[in-house]
Length: 438
View 1 (spheres, rainbow, N blue to C red):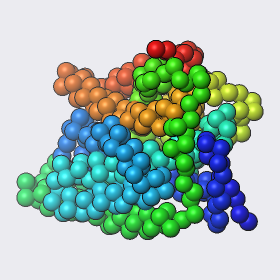
View 2: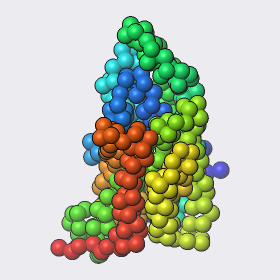
View 3: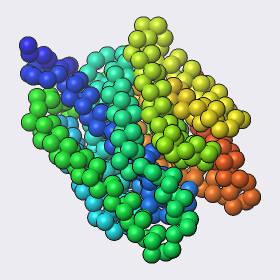
View 4: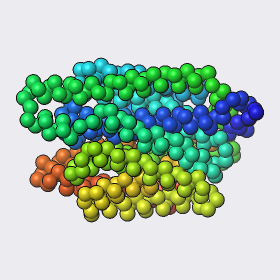
């Protein structure tokens, strides 16, 4: 049966075969799988390359900073290729990033690992710049959070699976390796670390192959093109009074809110394994906490799909989510051991509906500025680079300042509280700020 897809310009395009939402869902699955591998890589590279906390969190910095550096170039790529071909290009760039992991593992050069992560992030920047506006305009703006929540389930199921698979492959006997390294001679230590480093080669060869195959699939798929040019040429009387994206304060506050949101989401998912280890929890158990965090997010997405907008609005979902985030942050700070780690994982529930609600609220009413507004929001994903790195820096400073490692790791989570307060502000008042006129 043929289907049609309506763009914001009001035109319809026939789409035969697989529904566009399923193709975009497959891409969101890829986003989640590749992104949440970082939670395992942080601890893995910390051991393999002998890093401190700050250095290990350069994993997420290298990955997420690509969204800031490559945000504008990504929009230019899409302007030349269109959304569909741009997605294929993004997947191929990601494949190059996976390829870089092979020489990085063979040489155990940390900068080369970081380069591969940056290239992976660059490919994802192009994919996200295309796919998020795409899924938003596949229906009415009022239910955009519901559609993005569906995409979020694809994303987080992949994210829940990824650390289990990679952890099983590269963190086997990690506790034993850490113990043995303390008693080895330098030569023995070098051999052991090289063997550990080589474990990552096979998984990333598989990822490379899958990304190339998916790029070919997307290129030859029936995914309809969005006629964004018509959107740019359509100016309503209300929009004619704005000549710059910076005249939309609700978007600018939205970018800040998304910046800190991605930071706290990455903290909850990517720091929890290392944090659990610092609390004395064996790595054989600790490696599952990222999966727990993502299952909490999946539960939140299901609530969003059922309830938005039937039972509560996107604004209400964002307010409640931010308050839950504050409560769980305090829970993590004022408890210890399994309880504290569990509160970090429960942040998944708080974070689940933030992206689905933040995105449509931030781009609402931008009109012809929607594309550049979307690019700014994608650049805001760089919060995932900055906030975890700052957390690692704080923990190292507190540890060298005399605090025990486990206490320093807990105290570092104070960084979450102001982040959630900013999101509360956007949910209550920031998204209501009126555009400035000339």
